[in-house]
Structure formats: C-alpha cells, structure tokens
Amino acid sequence: MAKPDTAPRSTAPRPKMKNLRKQPGFDTMAWACLVFLYAPIIVLIIFSFNDNRSVVLWTEFSFRWYTAAFENEGIRKATMVSLKVAGVATVFATIFATMAALATTRNPPFKGQALVYAIINQPLMVPEIVTAVATLAFFSIIKQLTGINGIGYLMLAHTVFCVPFAYMPIRARLEDMNLTLEQAAADLYATPVQVFRKVTLPLMAPGIVAGAMLAFVVSLDDVIITLLVGGPGETTLPIYILGQIRRGITPEINAVSTLLLVLSVVLVSLFFFLGNRKK
Amino acid sequence: MTQSSFITPAQQAESDAKLAAAKAQTDADARRRRLQLLSPSVLLIGIFGLFPLTITLIYSFLSPGSYGGVTWEFSTNAYVQFLFEADIFDDTLSFSTTYLSIFSRSIGLALVATVGALIIGFPTAYFIASKRPEQRNFWLFLITLPFWTNLLIRTYAILLIIRDEGIINLGLMGVGITDKPIGILYTDFAVFMGLIYSYLPFMVLPLYASLEKLDFRLVEAAYDLYASRFQVLRHIIIPMAKPGIVAGCILVFIPGLGAYITPELLGGGKDLMIGNLIALQFGGSRNWPFGSAAALILMVVVMLSLIVYVRHAGKGGASHG
Image (tube, rainbow over the protein chains, first blue to last red):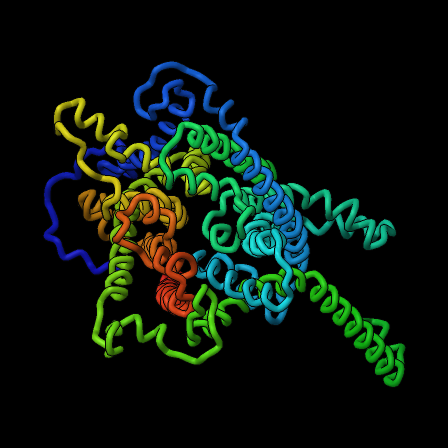
C-alpha cells in the first residue's frame, strides 16, 4: 500500500491538462517498444528477398533464396521431420486436452482439482532446459531397458509439453459455454452420445481448433527439448536452422526463417480471430 | 415436499435410501467418467513430465559414465564439484568459484533483463490500458504476436542487426559516429538485449491485466488534490499495479534464468549461463550427474521465486478484497 503523501502541498492552481490519463513519455515508450519488437523481424523478412548474398546491402528483389531453400535436401528433410512430430504431438495433445477440459469444467469443483491443474500445467512451470535434460535421462533408461529407439520418443516429449497449450483455449471455451442447449437436447430424448456429438462437440469446436493450432505452433518452434531428446536423423527445422546459424549466416536461412515466421503468425492470427468471434 | 405427509415414515425412509443410492450411483458414475477423461493427460504428464525430475535427482547422486550416461555408484561429487575443484595430481579439493560465478552471472543477467523489461513494459502496458477498448485488443495482439513466433528465429533476427556487419553498426559508421564497428554481439549487453526482446510480452501482459482494472477516478481525485503527474504515478498507479509488476517480473525472470538460445547465439563463447552449462554436461563434456545437479539447483531457484510470487499475489489479492 502507498504511504501517505507527505510532500508539501502546492497552492498553485491545478495545471490544465489535456488528458488526465496520460503520463509524459509513456506513448513514446509504447511505440518504441513496438519498434523494438518488430524491427529485427522486419529486417530479416526484407533481406530474405534480397538478391545479393549480403544481409545488409540491398540490391534487387528476388525469390532466389526461397528457390534455393526449397531445393535444399537438408531443409526438405528437416521440414518433413518437423511436420511429422508436430502433427502427431498436436493430435494426441489436443485429444487428451479436450478430455481433460471436459472433466475439469461444467461440473462443481471436485476434490483434487487443484492438483490436476498443477499436473497439467507442470510443463509450463519447470524451465525448459530442466525438462529437456530430465526427459533425456528418463528416455536413456527406457532405451537401455527395452532397446527400442526411434522418433517416437521425440513425439512423446512434444506431446507432453503441448498438452497445457492445447488445454488452455479448450477449457476457456467450455467455461463460456451455456449448458441449456445440452439440457434441451437431453429433454428431447437425445442419448448422451447424441448430445455430445450433435451439441457439445460443435459448440466447443472453435476452442479445440484454437488449442490444436497453439499446440502445433509450440511444437513446431521448439528448440531446447528437441535438441537434447532428438537423436541423429531427427533434425527438425529449428534444429537445422540452429546448426546453420552456428556455421555462419546464409540467405537461405533467412528465407526458411521467414517462412516459419509467417506460418506461426498466420496460425496465431487465426487463433485470435477464433477467440474473438465467440463474443 | 407436500406429498410427504401422505407417506408413512417407513416409506419415507425407504424412498430416501433409494434416492441416496441413486445419487451415490450417479456420483460414482461421474467420478468414474472424470477419471477416464483425466487419466490420459495426468498419466502422460505425470510419467513423462514429473517422474523424469525424480530421475534427475537420482542421477545427481551417481557417478558419471565414461561415454555419457551414469554408472550406478553413489557419489556426491556432482554437488562438491559446484564449490570445489579437485587437484589433478593429488585430488585435494580447493574452493573454486567457476560454477558459482556462472550461477551468479545468470541470476544477475536475468535480474537486469527483468528490470529492463519492466522499464519498457510498464509505460507500454499503461499506454494500452488507457486506450479505448477496441484499440486495446489490437495492441495486445501486436505485443503477443512475437511471443508465438519462433524464439530461435527472433534471436537470429537480433543477431543479424547487432553483428559487426549489421544495420546498427553500419548506420553508426555511416553517420560517422564511429569508424569501426562497436562490438555488440557476443557481449553481456547482447544477451541482456536478447533476453528483454524474448520475454517482453510476458512483462506487458500481466502489467496490462493490473492496469486495466485501474480506477481512473482515483487519478482524477489526486489531480484535484494538486498531485503532480509524478506523484500520481508514484502513489496511485504503481501501487495499484503491484500484483502485475510482481507477476511480470517473475514471468521474465524465470525463463530468463534458464535461457539457452539467447546466450548460445548472442553471448560470448566463455560467458555461459546456467542453461548452457546444463546442456553442455549432457553433450560435449558429458557429466550427467553434474548436469542433473545443476538442473536441480536451477529448479530450486525457480521454485523459490515462484514462492515469492505466490506470497505476493496472495497479499495483493487480500489488500484489494
């Protein structure tokens, strides 16, 4: 709480102010913040279309580096791995999160609900590097015991941290949902399965789509867990990009980065659109 | 229950029992259904998210294997190594600050970045909160959008503009302020910038959530009582935004402390942060027990900050309620 104001009171008349809500310099800072957030990204995007090898001197507009990126075997393979992992993780995480959201909403709170929330949100609370090494240690034991290897481990690790991201929008959607339609359907002799398929599921669909998109974006963008858990030959696109950056900057990487950036922006914009439409 | 008067007490008891049984049945059904719905998520995260943390604890008390991994021999070396260095010749221990300094450096950098993010984030959040509601959503969207794009690519974008051949240095040289590039990349300052850049949205969002609820009539009242703009900020706006400030600081500090990509790409090769130190133990230098111990110590620091947060959030809620 604020201490009582002990400053001597001025007897001068209150100065005239155009907008009482304004604080000096705050507008400038907000715009500067926006420039700070977007300028590096915009520079990257612009120079991915530069014909020159240089990432600094603009010569001519060209799709040259995009063509080069599409023809690059390493990038194509990494993209396929990324899509496979993100696809599998998204499907499972979304199904699990939908089930969990159905259980934790629209009913009176149950014993242990706080614990369930804590467990579902656990991947968000532990630093990613810790999750990454813990998962690596656990998987190495399983691999030793069973002798099974493969990309399944990476998919599993991604599914785990995608669940809370998928869960958030689905739960929000369900909490906003009105129960009356389902009750009406039940009154009209719909079986529970019919109520779920014809009423509940269509109503919660935007939440599910939003959750799936977030899960997909989060999986697609992951670096740390993939870097440690992923075996050789399980190079996702961000891991490939990281390797290239370590080796030196190439315009091809600007092109791929721009594509990945645009994909995330499109998906997240759609997510916002879906989220705002319910109002 | 007007009919109950026509029913004998025995009948009443019987129907009560039936009702109770039916209710117990539906309760049991609901509980079973809830269990079925929850078990996939809870089991998945419990087994593959929580349980591995226990393994890390066990690993931190084992001996390193010669090619990564561990050998199952109890040892506290991982923790001893933190503070002491064993002499190569006679194994005597001497106090060493190598790892301690990596930890304190990381905490320092994360703290400075948190303060930097607060200085940029607070005016921004206030500016958004004082906008008209329809403009607010758009601004929030603009602030959140970078958070959902790839952290690696955003860090790379920063690298592109601050390196010696980057736009900032070329600009400075073009204007004639310097004649050779000022080295920004691979310094602590670059890491500091990168951390602010990465986690700024985490600062703005909780600050906005607090400031949005600010009752501007209080601000008007203060001006009526001859408060200056600074006094209003100091005695009204900042105290009201305190829960948001605490939440924002925690949300920037925690991921900043465990950052891996930012120091990896922007920092100098020798100036590690905890995240890189941990990753290194599981890769190149291969001392899994030591890496596990470092990860656990990081976890402890994070948990301590979370406790601070929960305490403060509780106090904030109580004082407003």
